[in-house]
Length: 101
Image 1 (cartoon, rainbow, N blue to C red):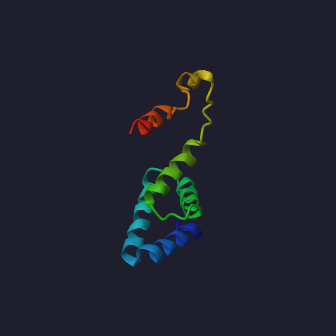
Image 2: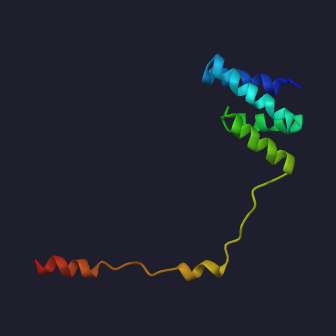
Image 3: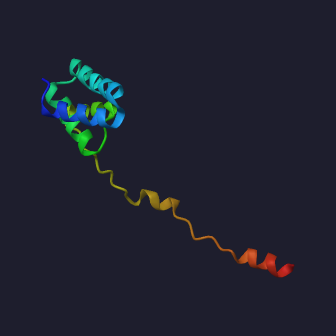
């Protein structure tokens, strides 16, 4: 259960946060093993480290994504948004104000 990725995460967490807070971060990650499969937690730690993060919340999010097999969905933007197009504003009225002075 405690492998090389755990060790790397703990070392990086202690380096960034100090011994006490780095160990707390690791403990929060270890508690994820209660609800999330070990492979997913390990993948979450790896992805968090890749993103230069030692935040246990990032590990949890990435671990859950690994379990769900979730990838970022591409949402197509169709012609439906064209109704929000507006012409560029004109500043001609401001020129009239300046000339009036």
